[in-house]
Image 1 (cartoon, rainbow, N blue to C red):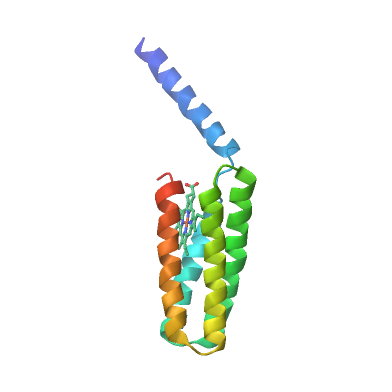
Image 2 (spheres, helix red, strand yellow):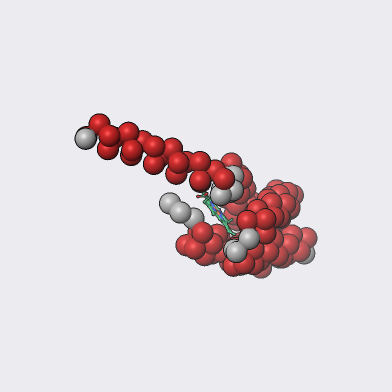
Length: 127
Ligand code: HEC
């Protein structure tokens, strides 16, 4: 009996794994890249590195475009789509502020952007 339970449990874990993959999970590498780029952006803004901030903000715009596409394709995740768009817009606002050498304003947008990460994780991150 105990043996059967173990086999059943193993089978359940397997099925769970398949369902998770088919569910179209967000690529973890993508989020890890976003994390690294967001950190780099914060330090580039803090040191008023215009070129570095611009490169990072552009990359984040692109990466959040991918996140947006993921949630659009997944469906039923309107809030996540909105939060992805908001993140893209904030990266755009940072680009504009940096171009104007307004690092205070860039820093404010970066703070809002980091808050947006947490908002989305609260609702959509499973672990
Ligand atoms: C629109 C939603 C959304 C936004 C915005 C978002 N994330 Fe995520 N993030 C997720 C989801 C969903 C997961 C978990 C994916 C899963 O469990 O399949 C995740 C996972 C992560 C992880 C864990 C990756 C790992 O390897 O475990 C990190 C780090 C992360 N996000 C960083 C960020 C940062 C930094 C930002 C903002 C600059 C951000 N995220 C913005 C949805 C989002």
